[in-house]
Length: 311
Image (cartoon, rainbow, N blue to C red; front, side, top):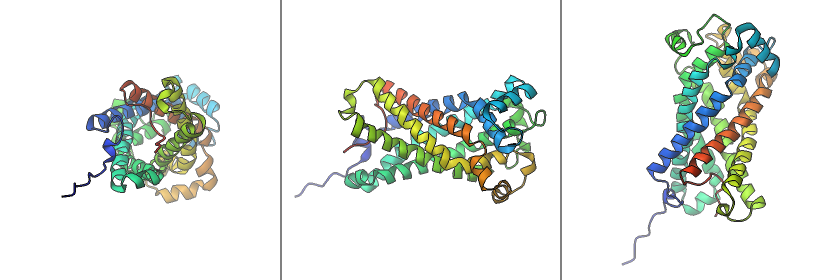
């Protein structure tokens, strides 16, 4: 009798194997990566949101910081930090944790040869699938954050507890922004993971050509940061119009308006360019740091650095 051929499973083709414990550690790494970094750049986010909803008043990054500090005090530069921390910690948990799950799932469906041959498509499908769920977890907190950051002083609470109690004043809460979030975050995350994987692969193919483990952890994490930063700049460009629309929802004068109406009122130029400078700076830095923190955590756990699958 012929032996039954063992079915290849992507989960167990790695070292270490991708057990449930591995996925759980990746999810926790995502909490650290996204929660810490998004909270740290809250001042940039506050100015970016105000540049999008009130571009005449907030025309630049540093001038915008000055206006907020003069009119509302320096604390205005960190308003919305609590829902930012909660929302992006949850998003990071699903984004990074489920990406590993879906990437292995789709690779197993494709089979060993096709999983390598079509790895780019698997990166895109895995990241899109993970982000779909991540945005549902993020949505209520993103809506609260935008409302806090874009409201005129004194018109909406800035403290987390008071803002949560006043959530009825947030148009569409808790999931009214999930569609524009998907429009912003799914392309963003697809670019984030795809280009990160490809840039890492390029580094280890053309620059650092010896086996990855032969390089120091410092070098490997340097590759991680550089690849993440490059991916982040592309992410910011891809998702800018949808990010602008999410910010517009927090503007009182836009209450009840459809996304199509808000987009038409802004015009294509404003939709693409209002707040783009701070966003490129913020997202490039964010993405590089997120991948660095995530891979530093994975390295500490004995799981190695991410990206650059080679046959």
